[in-house]
Image (cartoon, rainbow, N blue to C red):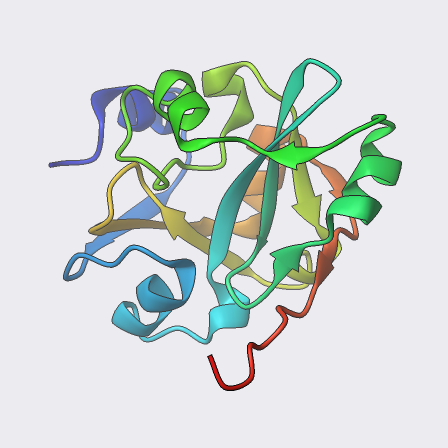
Amino acid sequence: MPLSERLRSFLESHSIEYSVTVHPRAYTAREVAAAEHLPPREMAKTVVLFGDGEYFMVVIPANKVVDLPEARLTLGSNQVRLASEDEMGKLFPDCELGAMPPFGSLYHMPVYLDSSLTGEDRIAFNAGTHREVLHMNMSDFRALTQPSVVSLVREPLIAHGI
């Protein structure tokens, strides 16, 4: 599946320079980072949260997970949870499940960028499929998305013996 026309039009209408790479199908952000030969900390993943009747896009490094209690506080919500697969399918009908790009304006939701990514010159993320990755300058990404910069991640827990 080629880069969606919606995403391509969005980037080109803002005169954004970007590149797209194609790799073997990969489903997790860590698998995508490996397929792209990028350190997981340099590969961004889009996480969708739901809290107090609203959806939020959170952009974090592939090697981290969202700290939900911290997200609840930062977002000012009473409760926060991950969006379900059913919700994701409805929110991102033009994307493969779990491969949505972090452009909240395309999907009518605010974007939160984890502060650990702000020091990177470039950002790479799924481009709507489990085979395509979009690469662009971080400064262009920030100008385009106007994200709130927050600290919402923690190291993933490692299951011992499982």
